[in-house]
Every structure is written in structure tokens, then in C-alpha cells.
Length: 357
Image (cartoon, helix red, strand yellow):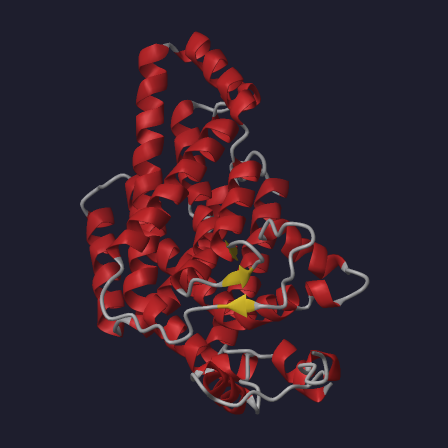
């Protein structure tokens, strides 16, 4: 029982990871309160127009992560660049775009890395025990839903590439993650921004700013699961192996891609804005999604993923200890396969009948 508790609580997060998560939650709360105050005082019109204030929590976390991962003087250079742009009269929206794209992207990735270290083995332990428990609780059902685990599959036999070493930058994984993020981001972008209610209240330019800020949260949907693909975590089945990453991708697609409402919104927007304006808007949304997913994917896979993999691999034997008699069992099986090796019978009914004629 003690061993199971230790495995369930297996946590790879460091003090810095915990500090980053606390900073993110505190700053999120602070700027949520600031947003509410601004709405009550009439400084902003509603919750939609308060999104730039609320999202500044990602910039705060990103600045700390940027300085911690690189060097403090790079942070000073970034501040100097932003100050120079403001001094020379560059539009505030463009400056905010740079801040949110660079620092916001760093903030998102750093929080995701901290969460991966904290919950990777907890998720595996929860999945592993699904088929062993008579009654499933909410967390079990959540894992089944997220990873799209088929009913009746024995989840106790988990496999992974636990000897993996990342020797080079995984360009294929970067492109694959970007592609999935852009597709999901475009669906959500069109679904939210071309909603007739949005178009009737806000200008198209302001909708673009709001939607860009919302795309900063798309990596929270896509990036956390990439570690399951990198380590090829899978459940051994009777006929084929079920890969956890493929399961979670199918769940994301089902949730984030409401095709029929989007088609209705596009038709409505085409009638309201015109085909040319609509195509231009979709092109801009595609560019914004590409920028967001490219920056966060590169930062994650180039600066952080290798360390996360090393941390996970180094503790795999703690999560999945080898049986004590595994080597003895292997040797016994090898002996049995050698020709002319005497066999030991364990069942008396299997003994040959020497008395019959």
C-alpha cells in the first residue's frame, strides 16, 4: 500500500516549477480583480474589452521565465526595444502584440512545463488503475474521456519509450504540434469571432485584438499532451497498442471543431462583411495562429522538452519497478527453448502414460 501511495504522488516538479505555478495563479487572480474593477468604474465596457488586462498575467509569468531561462540582460534588451518603439510613436496595439507574442508565449510554455512535471506520473498512475478498480471516481472518468480510452481495455499494462534521449531538435514534432494548434485555433477563432453577436457589438479591428489574445491560450489545449507522444506512452491491448496521444487528439478534435455552427457563421459573415473582407479576416487569423503556435512550439521543444524527458525517464523505474524474479524467469524460459533440455512437468495429468500398450 505504501508503494502505491508513493507512485501516486510521484512528482517531478522543482521549487521553481511550484513558484511559477503560484505566480501564474496569483497574477491571474490579481488581473481578474483589476478587470472587474475597471468594468465597475467604467474604464472598460465589459468582460470582452477587459481581456487584454486579464491576459497580462501571462506577460508577468513570461517575463520571469524569459529572464530565468535565458539571461537577465536579454530581458533588459527586450524592455529597451519596447521603450524605443513607444518613443518613436509606434502604435500601442503593435507594441502590445510584441509583448504578448514574446513574453506571453514564454509564460504559457513555462506553466505547461511545470504542469507536465507535476502531473505526468499522476496521470499514468490514474490510468493504470482504471481497470483494477471496481468503481470509477470522477478522476478515472476524466482520464477515460480525455484520452478516449475504449471500454474494456486493460489499462494496467502501460508501455513507454523510457530509454529515450533527445539528441536533436524534433522538427517533425514542432511542425505536427503547430499544425494541430493552428487547426484548432482557426476553428475556435472563427467560431467565436464570427459569431453574429460579436459582429453586431464590436468592430472587426477590436475583435482581431481580442482573438489574438485568446489564441495565447490555445497552447494550453495542445502542448501539455506532446510529452505523451514524445515518449510514445501507450496501453498494450490484445490486438494493437492504444497510444495515449492519439486518444487525446481525437478528444480535442471532437470538442474544438464544431463544423456545422462554423459554416453557418461563415455564411452569415460573408453576407454581412463581403467575401473579400471575410477572406482577409480569415487570412489574418491564420497568420496570428501561426505566430502563436510557432513561437510557443519552438520555445517548448528547443528550450524545455529535453529536460522534461530526462526528468521523466530518470524516474521511470520508480514508477514501474522491474519484478524481482524477472531475470530468473527469463533464464528459465531460455532454458526451455534449448533443444534436448529436459522439461519439468508441473501437472500430473500431463505426464506420459508408460503403462499403456
